[in-house]
Length: 133
Image (cartoon, rainbow, N blue to C red; front, side, top):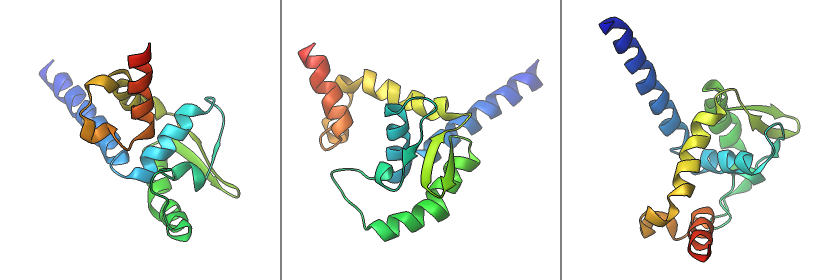
């Protein structure tokens, strides 16, 4: 029993570490958000779906980072799958694990500190909608 609890605990810790590592960079967060807005089997175009509309990046630099860093990481963790031609991403088998973090944040938008909301269009909208409703 103790060994099973340890293995299960270790597995959960590893999964949370994967989720937070995946969400630790803005382009990866934007890809997850874009996929949340898309139908479950629909792909999203890249690099445009990896861009925060408030902070447009250098397009060539972003494309390189997507190919060499962001997409391989999300793919290795099975949160997304992607194709190079055309450059697109779709939900992977473990997508619901990263999606759950955004679902929880959006549900609690009124409780999230202003320093994490102001400038984030999605959370600003969620907060505004919950105040209006």
